Length: 231
Length: 63
Length: 297
Image (cartoon, rainbow over all chains, first blue to last red; front, top):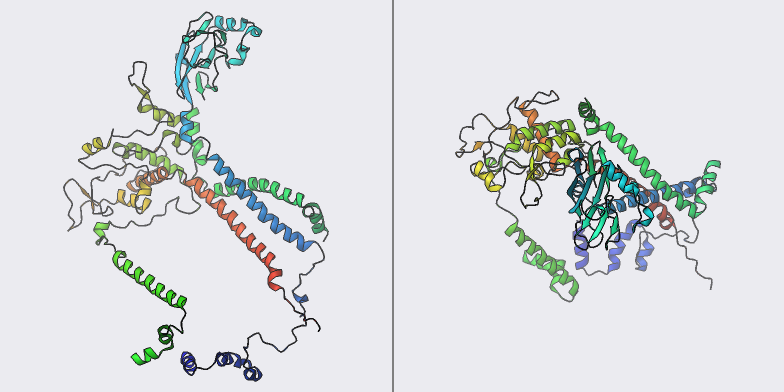
C-alpha cells in the first residue's frame, strides 16, 4: 500500500513538499503545510531560548570528593592494568631473545671426575672449545701457591683460579692467538703453546712468552662430590 | 566524605604522585594477580600436575 | 507486463540519463558486474568433489571426556607418565618421536635422575675422536629420543612398504586429534564387517580413512604393567598413550591455558574499564545543548 502511494505521488509529479507534508501531517500542523516549507519531527512551537532544567541529571554529591575519587580510581585502574599488560608484553618479547632450552641443554657439559687419577690431564670439548681438567697433586698445589704473585704479568692468586685446589679447570685456548697449549710441558711445569712459545705454570698463569693473560677459567660447579658441570 | 578527601589529597591531587602510584601499583598488582591465578589454577587442577605427583618418585630415589 | 516494468519509476530513472547521475549508474553497473563475477566464481570453484562414503572418509570418532579437555584443565601428569611407558614399551618398536628430547620429560613425567638413567640406556654417536672415528656414547639429557629405524627406507623395508608416522605431532596432525587416536587404537574389530574388503597385508579399522590400515591391533589387556598399579586395560593404555602424545605435540599446553586465563581476565577488565572511561569522557559531549541567542538588532 505504502509503496503504491509513493509511486502514485511520484507519477503525479508532485513537488517534494507534498511528500514531506505526508510525514509532517501526523504532527497535525496545517500551518506548516500551507507555507510549503520543510517540516521536521523536531519542530516545536515552544520557546527554544529557554534552557530546560537539567538539575535532575546532575551528579549527586558533586561538591565532595567521592565522585572524583571514583573517576580517578577508574582511570587509574585502566592505566594500571595497561601498564601491567605492557610490561608483561615487553618482557615476553625480550625473553624471546635469550637462549632457547635446546641451546641451554647443550651449553652444559657434565664430567665424571672419579675416572681422572691424580696428576693427570683430561681435555674435553665444551661449546666447541677444549677445556683442560687437571687433577693436581698436593706438591703441584704447593708449587702454585709458592709463586710471588706480584712478579707475574697477569697477577692472580692460585686460590682465585680454582674452587677446589686439586681440580684446575681452564679453557685450553692460548690467550695470545688462540692455539691449544700442550700439557705437562714448558719451563714452568704447566702448559706450553707451540705456536709462539708461551709458557704457563701449573695454575695456568702466563710466565713467559708473548701471551698477555692467564688461561681463562670457564664457569663451572661441582654438582656432586665427583661430578663437574661446566657451563 | 573524610576518607574520600584523604584519598584525593594524598594520591590524586598531584599528577606525578598519581602516575607514580599507578606504575608502582602495576608491579604490585602483577605479583598479586599472578600468585592468585596460580593458586586458583593449582586448586582447580589438584592431583594432575607434576608437582602433585612428584613426591612419589623423588622419595623413591632417596631410598 | 513490459508496460508496467517500463512504467516503473526505477526503470525510468535508469533509462533516462538525465534523471540519473553518472556516478549512480556506474555504481549500479559495478555492483552488477561484481555480483556476476562472484556468482561465476562460486559456480566454477565453489563445489569441490568430496569423499562420498563414510568408509572412504573414515568413521568419525566419538567425543571423549579427556582430563585436559576444558579451557582451564591441565594434563593429568600421572597419565602422561603411564602413557610414556606405553609408548616406550609398545609404540617405540615402530614409531619414532623425533621432536621430543629426553630433557623435556624432566619435571613433566619423570625426575631428572630417572630420565638420565633412561637416556643412558640408549647409544648415540659421539663427536669424532682424534683418529676421526665416531664412537658410541651413552645418551644425555640433551639428546632426542632415539628412533627405531635409521631412516625412512629402513622403516618401510621392515613394515612391508608402510611407513609408521613419527608420533611427535600426530595429535595435531590428524582430524579428531585425541578422539581419533583413541578410537583408532581401540577400534579394531575381531573380524571386518560383512561386505568390507581389506587388501592383503592390511587390517580393518573403521576409523582409518579407507578402512585398511597397515598397523595391526597392538594394545591388548595386560600388555604393560603400570608401576602405579593402574589396571592396564586396552582402553586405559590407549587413553594414557593418547594423552602422552597430546603432550608431545603440545608441551606448552598447561602454560598456554594458564596464560590464556590471565590474558582473558586482564583484557576483559580493560574492556570494561575502557567502556566506563568512554562514557565518562563522552557524557558531557552528548548531553550538552547548544543555545543560540540572536543578537538584538
